[in-house]
Amino acid sequence: QVVNYAPFTLLPSAVPRALFEQAYAVQQDFNLLVDAISQNKEFLEQTLASTIKVDDFTARLFRIYKQVLEEGLAQTVFLGINRSDYMFDCGLDGTAALRQIEINTIAASFGGLTSRTADVHGLVLKVLGRTEEASHLLPNNPAKGLALGIAKAWELYGSQRAVVMFLVEEIQRNIFDQRCVENELWNRNIRVIRKRFRDVFEQGSLDASRRLYMDGQEVAVVYYREGYVPQNYDQQNWEARLLLERSRAVKCPDIATQLAGTKKVQQELSRPGTLEKLLPGRPEAIARMRATFAGLYSLDEGEEGDRIAATAIADPDRFVLKPQREGGGNNLYGEELRQVLEKIKDSPERTSYILMDKIKPQPALNYLLRAHSPLQVSECISELGIFGVYVRQGQELVLNQAAGHLLRTKAIEHADGGVAAGVAVLDTPYLV
Ligand code: ADP
Ligand code: MG
Image (cartoon, rainbow, N blue to C red; front, top):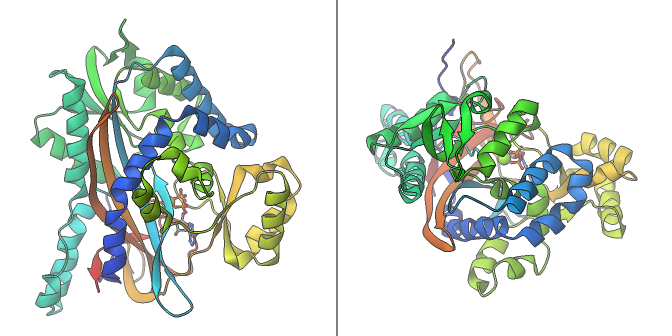
């Protein structure tokens, strides 16, 4: 067993205050939107129809989704924890605009560790004699915000003895991030257990009213920090997932909400009229969300897809090609984008990707501190994430909040990849 410090920047990075505030101001809207999509069977079915023909992972999730709907949901309390990620697109005139990269609706991480990064950067600034600047760093505690949502869901589930179950990976590389959230729950006298899919397969069961038990212990909330990539599943794990989804326990997220976070759904949201259909009577919320969208394009078979594929092949540096995957390191850029698109442009496989306008932020210098890596100054770009938490009981939304932020910074030579992928590091925004 080896423990390393989490990678971080030596110095906080400058973030435009107006864009930071804009990202916070739109978070409750995105919570509402994700929740609305998760309850809209027709939209999910239509949107994912082409994807599930070619993408086996999305298809398997979708099969479970359909199966639990047909049986009838036992779950009555819903908990969403998401993180909406943005980059600051630098226009020709030098002004920056907030552009959404994606919303993570499952296993959005680093809310725990980043609750400590402002303290680290505050100390560094003081050591450098910048006490005044240190005092400007914002407090930030997503761990507390996420725990508040989990605690609310636990309370509404309504069984004092029931536990919260963190569903964790087979090999756990980010346990301390999760412990920050876990400790907040223990502080509220809520019991937490950590289990893997394998444990659920071996010890999990449902009673007649589909209450979930692990070795005889009732589970109120299942918080997934696992289950978002195909490698997380073998046949037994799929069976365990189905058991969890069928149960009355509050899943964070339920499978519908996981599907709401797919790249294909994101691309369809940018189509004119889609947001209006999903959130009728909320024009202000829609305007706020749309103002953060980058150009997104369907590669479904047909004329629209043919046209944008040809444009991207001719000018690959304008775009990012994205498969239906999470976790970083899957997207294609530049020459590689061109080659792949050239190869699949006339095959159904094209449908398993979407295209997105490439965001081009203004780089800044910083030091990236990573265990066992040499120290050097790098040209860096940052990605801002805002955590969102909401709880719904039946049709009533009882909690809807922004729960804190995460700034991740990487060297510009890496087109892709987050902190877990070993590319980005934890940072703190210094508002300018
Ligand atoms: P994942 O689900 O794998 O995290 P993302 O959509 O977040 O997928 O993309 C991974 C990374 O790729 C992002 O963190 C960002 O650094 C980079 N990236 C994604 N989309 C764009 C884009 N449109 N422009 C520039 N970089 C992007
Ligand atoms: Mg991402």
